[in-house]
Image (cartoon, rainbow, N blue to C red; front, side):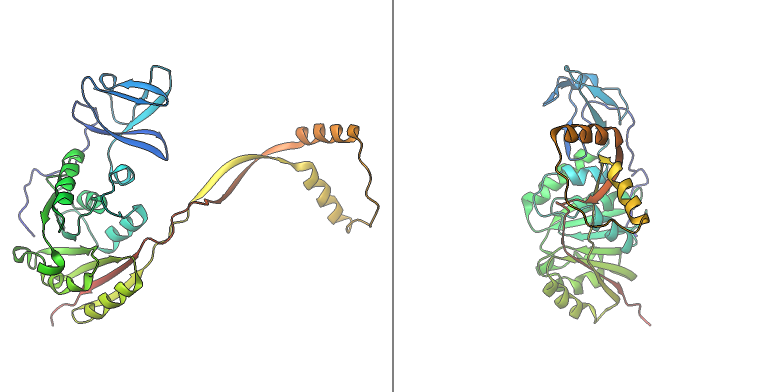
Length: 319
């Protein structure tokens, strides 16, 4: 285990102060990160909100605009931050992140190596998982992305748990100073098989590696290299299916008539009766009186599909 400061901790202040980052929640698909300032004002379709009215209030508070409309002020948890962060690269979402954290066996006190940093979506969840005494070492070959990631980690209050460095892991490998000290390694690279030998040197005995790849050809080449030093090689694809639930009005009279017909052995063929306007009006009145509220659920039409393949492997212990 690398030496870490005993003072490191991940905590959320329960009352909002100047300089805090909060997530302004309008609805489940409309959220925005806002840094609180003394004279700041947030404007949206509901009106304007003065930051001065937020200061001193607990996270989770409902605040009202000049028009009487409200929003919620929430803590920047990893789950919410993943939904509102700036996309510098393609990111991992909650379904893949939760799977990665579990199968990498990340717990408080762990040391985790990550390449590349990207937009920092996974890094934020890893930081919370290793807190308060663990540490995440994240590497990205793109200098501006690394700088932006550091700024984001400062905003969310996890900079003491994440170290971001500029390094080409595919070409140079991980730093030798971390050799044998990592509990787990995560790779999100175009050619992850090039980084597997270096990752094996970084892992402790029985450590776990995960590689995220969008294409199955990348998975195949990575698995070929993993077989030399790793065991328990497994690949998963996580598909999340969400449902929309809503209440609708349904006419129950027709359902009752159909059930009676079935009980009587069906109906005999007959001529279709011509309906007058008066009959239609009566029918509408009866249907409105017989309508009941029914809760219906169906899969969302815009559900997110394939994101990538997650390949896990455990470092083979020396005999």
